[in-house]
Length: 377
Image (cartoon, rainbow, N blue to C red; front, side):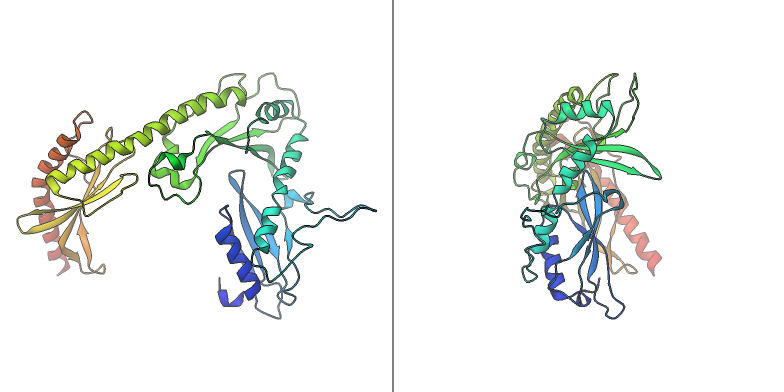
């Protein structure tokens, strides 16, 4: 994207939107609306909704920059009219477009957020679906706050209704001391129902998937969480309490495991000395300086979320041997995990056994480094 080919007024509003919106809005593409100038005055926004992205085209006119932009919605949303025309005798309500100020950098952000009316539009679409099971599920879940829903339909795809159900009332950010998470960490259950316009005596289970904020993986792995079974005849109101109970228990265990990893890193300081660097929040990584005679090297520890059930991965890095063909990058070992280990040992014994293992392994690594240097000559 050539910044110098975007009109300044448009660029200012777009940058403000991308940096100040609480949602992770992205620009998919930009293009020019005229053959007479090369200004990029049109772009497609990817806006997160219902655990997916919807695409809206924002159409400015570089030749008339004082005018507000048009917004073109997706082909499935032709009936979405966020700012309907006033009826005869009515005063038209003000909105971001009717009160447009091109010199105000916040205007595009306000416009996109005002289009949160899209959420109500989708709820209305879903509520109008002629499917008794869906109507029942919606009625049982209406008391839960923050649920998003989306009606997916088209010529080449089956009708489906997607739900994004926020889980857990606990504040995940506050559970991790010292976390630098910028956004509130959340976990959702994605529920997808096929639309059936006829009565089914035994409806199949919906498609279920757990989705979390990307940053949460430093604490808890959604991929390794096993969803409870969907029993015959079950509805979401029955399923969610069991799911949330299991999820809350495992997250509390994940928070507790931070302190277990912290104690292990502290124990490593006895044979290795103070770490050169260590992850102070999640305690997932630490690096120590070690030596064998005159050979000095670094030991990188990566601790899995399942520590101590799973042992740390070690990588050795020479302080004296470098790849001549890779920008003088230091020579490193392969990942080392075949060493004595038991999750039943206390952390001091774990640290001591790793230190004993490295007494011999560092000699093998030194030999490997020398062989690499010979091959580079």
